[in-house]
Length: 120
Image (cartoon, rainbow, N blue to C red; front, side, top):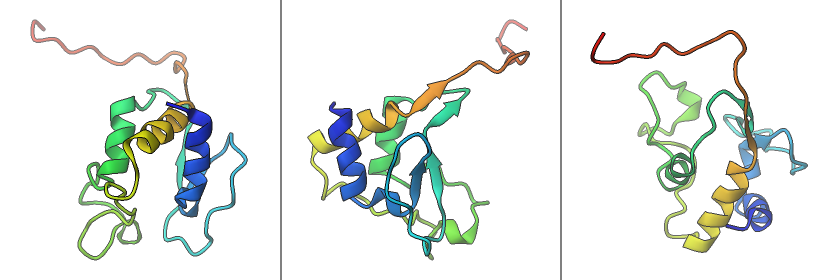
């Protein structure tokens, strides 16, 4: 995908209304937005391409019952617009390429995830 075009789409589709990316100069989020969701940055596990695609085509897929009320609509779904009938596949690929490029993986010093195996 074309990450540069994806950044343009991120702005034109109004994603900056609720989402921020600290490493990119983007329009300020809407101050009346019920929630501001930061994307990108330094993370211990980078969001995979499929996770990012799923987050766009099904924004409610990772919701848990304990979500704050201002983060969901009255029916318990994400407040994020579903773009399935709005965005082309090419645009989706470009947008995800842009988002994926904003994550930087780092190793947490001194911390190791415990390995679980069926033989233990």
